[in-house]
Amino acid sequence: SIPTNAVLWPFSWNELVLGLRESLRDSGPVAESKVASFGDVHVNFTQMEVRRSSSGLVTLTRQEFKALACFVANPGRVLSREELLNEAWGYDNYPTTRTVDNHVLKLRQKLEKDPAYPVHFQTVHRTGYKFVP
Image 1 (cartoon, rainbow, N blue to C red):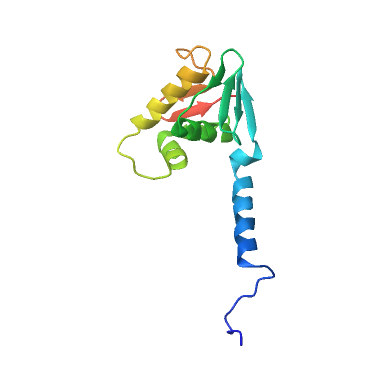
Image 2: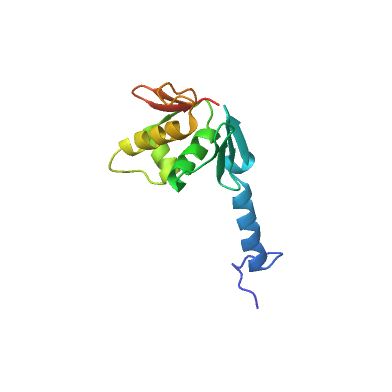
């Protein structure tokens, strides 16, 4: 006999898990746009590859890639350092927001034409950063 508080599903547990995995893999801002381009930079989120037309494949650390994905998912929006820590690092309290500054510096060095005069990863003083595609 089936308990009165049981929920009956029209599929098996394995089908549910597979469906959820597919849904999670295909959802979210990065999945909506699996490829992004700005300047001479081309990002393929599915393959986790970044290329520049001028110099070819660019090597990013996993954390740099996560920060880049956060920026690309929020074009033109000013993101505070705390928001970036929450979204790209996944936790609320990190010892220092300088971590974000250092990662943005590395993204600029690797992806900007002239890192001293960034076009895509702009500083919004006393607030955070803004990505301009």
